[in-house]
Amino acid sequence: MKCPKCSAVMEKVKTPEAVVDRCTSCKGLWFDLLEHQEVRGKAAAKLDLGDSGVGRKYNKQQRVECPYCAQRMTRMTVRGQPHIHYEQCNTCHGVFFDAGEFRDMQSMTFGDMVQSLFSRERA
Image (cartoon, rainbow, N blue to C red; front, side, top):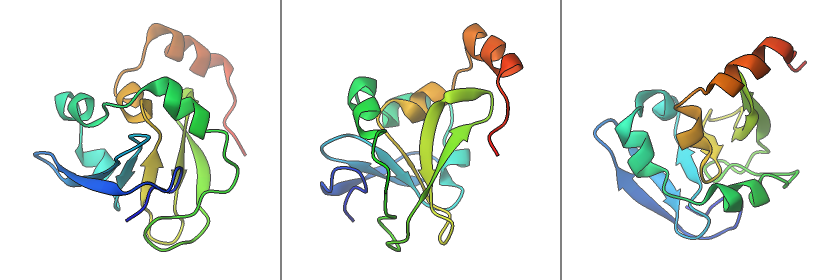
């Protein structure tokens, strides 16, 4: 499988909950259907080793194709954390997090809570 953002090869990484694909270059993470909901806590921190600055660089891509089924993925935000953008495939329901996003999603800061009070849901 190739990374949907930088086209590098993805490696398989085993966690206690799932086997996840991680890009060997940009360190983005691909989760098959619902895998991202199973991996939590310390496993998430060990899995998402990438530099969040590199992840933000790849967040600017407008068209991202699913590495599994080649369909165009939809850009999503994490509820309560609108600064986290990830891509989801509407066909196979896999998700891709840029480096640092999955780790960041695991902890909601005070700033995230305040921001969520004043931000509107995207239509």
